[in-house]
Picture 1 (cartoon, protein in one colour):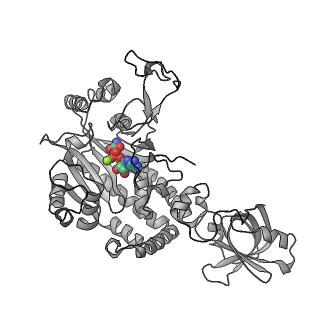
Picture 2 (cartoon, rainbow, N blue to C red):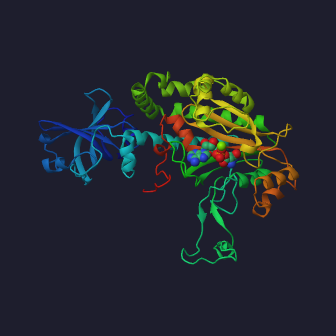
Picture 3 (cartoon, rainbow, N blue to C red):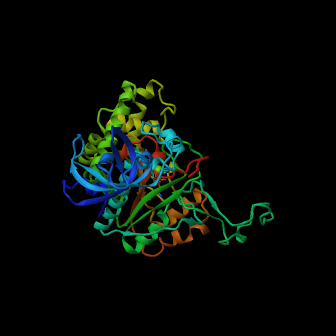
Length: 483
Ligand code: 4AD
Ligand code: MG
């Protein structure tokens, strides 16, 4: 009977023969007995194999045991016995061991010692095999599952929005072009620019920056929907929070206003965190300890006073702070770092875009909890956000959390056709590129709202990792698409 290590570790000693498949993490030998720590990815925990060559089991030879080195794959069978060492209840007394794939110790890059995250990024094809990345990707899976469960339990429908689009949802123009036109001598218009009417789709197309516009169409019939897909941004920002390809969850709800939207977002985040605390105990425990060690190395002023697990518990049990942009700017204007000119971007006037240093101050120093900032100036937000009665602000909301910064961006949508047309014009969005989006406002238009959760930002928050490139299996960032 072949079992996963997560299953084996729940069993009691018995005479039954079990078989386990996995990879060697470490091997330590004393006389003729070898102790092999084996991991199969099902859990962060290893199974200890005890191999006694003197027992004379067929196939357990010195030659085979010489191949049992860090990184090699092994198939081991034997009986589970009570463990002599601490840390695990049972260990496997091997009666047979085979090595389907060796890992030459002189070449294998992942030796059993602590490697830097930077180094591990360079060996992205192997980093899954470390404790830290195993933990992160198991948590990533758990969060994916919890997201679908959250929405399914609440009557939302999952919509697959397109990856190739002809529109720019965010109106920021930072898109990757999708084309099959020849690189050399593409067809040109009279003005010398490329003639995209000759392109594959008969128009210029790009990788989507957001599934929101399409989700809005679906919400106008299905009521409550959400997307969960890859999105692409060609902004040249080489930061620890930006990826060129990231995953976004975008719920969209008909007959919901900004307050409903904030309530949904807060409930959603708390649900996901509580789910992780309940279902990823071993992995979060490991990540929390790792985080505490890193924290000790930081200068006193930057140290966090809570462990990762304490921080997650705190967030899932306390309500988020809600402030308007105007209130946030007042706080920032009068705060000590601003007065002492410590901000790279000084806060002087209403209307500025909040930089990550400002967001961090609000969340980490001032409120010390997640913050929802609402009602931003309309100039610094997207064209589709509903214009407030003051004519200056829009019904937007951003959720900021410690470490990851802006984790959610959302809004109530502009449901009034004439105002939306005017806003699109102000943002220089050609109406013919979004005629279908405008059309929705002509037929049964209603108040509706939604938001986008950056999946990797969520994972940074939940795992305590500081770099967004460490929470996605294969990061895409400027000058980086190796694996
Ligand atoms: O604030 P954003 O740009 O909002 C939208 O795209 C809306 N269409 C969402 C909606 O209302 N349906 O992006 C949403 C979230 C951000 O808050 C952030 O968490 C994440 O997506 N995000 C990124 N994550 C990683 N790398 C990037 N380059 C990101 N840009 C945005
Ligand atoms: Mg945003």
